Image 1 (cartoon, rainbow, N blue to C red):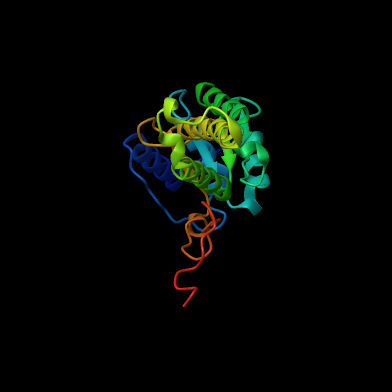
Image 2 (tube, rainbow, N blue to C red; image 1 turned 45 degrees about the horizontal axis):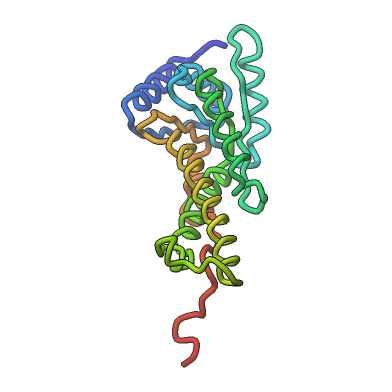
Length: 224
C-alpha cells in the first residue's frame, strides 16, 4: 500500500518510542489508516524475533482487525497472525499443562515474528488470575508452613493437609508459568502492545475488570 507523509511520520515516531522503551499515544481521525496502515506497518517493523508484538483492540473490533492483518501478511510479506484467548471461568485457566502450552505458543510467536491479536479483557484476566493464584498460595493453611516432621502422618487431618499441599503446589506452578507469560509483555523482554482505540481501552470508568479473590469474609462492622 501507499503511505501518506503523516502516516510515515507516525510509524517512525511509534517505532522509535517502542525501541527505546517509551509509551506513545497519537490521535488520528477516522479513515486515516490507524488499523489498516499504521498498525500492520508497526507489526512488521517491531516483530523482529526478539520481542513479542500484540495488537490489543476492543472486543467488537477483534474480528475486523485480525482480518486486516491476515490480508496484509498473506502475500508478499508473510507473517502469522494469532489470537490470544483467556477466561478465568475456564477450568484450564489454572491448569499448569494448558498454561505451559500457551507459554510455548507465545514464545513460538515471538521467535517466528508473528503478531498476536487480543482484547483488553484477556490481558486483564491473565493479570488478575496471576494475583488470584498468589492470593491462594499466601492464604494457605498455616500448618503447611510447619516442618514436615511436625505434621501429623495419619488421620483425617493428615489426609486433608496432603490434598491441600498438592493443590497448593499446582497453584504455585501455575502462577510461575503465568508470571513467565506476563514478563514477555514487560520492558525487560521488550514486549510491545499496540493499542487501537486507546480512549476506549483505557477509559477509567469502562475498562475495569473486577472479580473477588480469597476466602469469604463478613463485611466490617456487620455485627454492630
